[in-house]
Length: 392
Image (cartoon, rainbow, N blue to C red; front, side, top):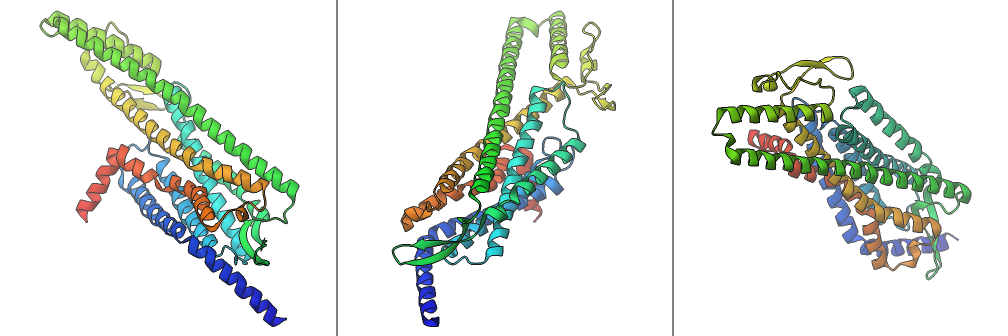
């Protein structure tokens, strides 16, 4: 009996080694994911969390998103390597369940943080006169994201584990870390449906929020072009050759900025058109925000610069969200196919399985591309990196 058991064990190991050999390119890619995720997100946390000074309003969520991306890239990539190395010999039930929990928790945390960022950008761009997310609400939203991610990750320990599967050609059983075929079918379908509903809801919400934001930014850019064109026309008509014309032009610009103040800036009181001068326009006047505290009134130049910063960071987060959607659609599709067919992975050759696993795990790219986006679109982030390199 012992000899029979030994023979079967050897066959399973040989079978597993064959699969591992076919997944070597996949393991190399996952290792690159781990290194890139570790270096890139650690750099983001260090720069945004400890090096940047001053106003961090638009950059507030970046370190938290980077921390979620860091853990997601390390956990998911290492878990993928472990699964590749033990395609037919993953018999540690507790390790499998623990890995599934942390992989789901870190991934869901990153997704919920993206949704929070989208809501924050929507309020800043589309409802500047309405209530904004205060520091208290930002922290509350982050805690809620962590809590919901934890609650949704817990059932993974019930529905996923070390599952036996048959190799019909060799007539032997292997064990892999995947969805349990012995789990309650009804419960598995309910949980899978819930995850699918949440995924669709989040994706739809992100698309709707950023679509409205995009339309708002487009309208603003159109108005800006029209104002610049009118300014050019005024100058071409001799506005700079006559002092009276210069004065009337200044008054017209003052009135134009005054109108923008009433319609687009949050918490700023309206200034009288007839009495304001260029000097008063540049001055700082105290006013009240939503919380009732006195805050300085920004000059029109600073307001325009501030608005450009808001739009720039909004476009940056829009790009991050687009990459997230592209990366997660393949994973979601394969998960649905896997849920419908318990022998889904056995239907592919070794090469086909390797390609499919690469596509399935491409979602990890979402957790390692964000630092590259920050480096290209946030000049202050790039300057801080250069400064650190010079200091070293």
